Length: 244
View: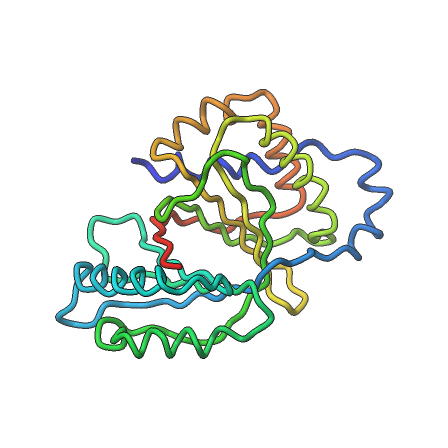
């Protein structure tokens, strides 16, 4: 399937700009997100002699281990790029506690033999994040698809101005029967960069989104509002598997 079809939720971000936004621009620039968790991404590659079956077996053992461990201090996810052949992947550690889960996470992987299977860049580049929207529909799945977009705010804009569009987006998308979640990530230090992640919980989400939203008359205004605030420089699609 053409990847361009997947990038359609970029137009979901929200409606047209008003004079009220311009009048309150300075006040909005002072607003920062109310972050809910921290998160880190680790780029990995399978070692020579190992394949996805080896990785699947390793992950299966972790799932069994988690069945006896009810702690929810952090989530561990694997991102596989949409490709016929995969030897590289991304691990995502999402921490909900004030404890530093980084060392415990690495120890857990090493103790279970992960170092033999794959090599990763374990640099501690921590981001803060929050869920901007999650539908009330059943979305508890161990595997689903995400669209990860790396974006830059336009000059004079930041989360304070963008939140107006996000709020209106959440109000509108909540009226649609689409199992979907949007997540916002940004570094702790002041930055014009951020990451927006669309979580799709339907196999045929492209057709569902086209039917429910992309063909909606509001789409053009919503895209315009997003482009006024920020531009996304690239978008990548991944199959995601949650381990804990």
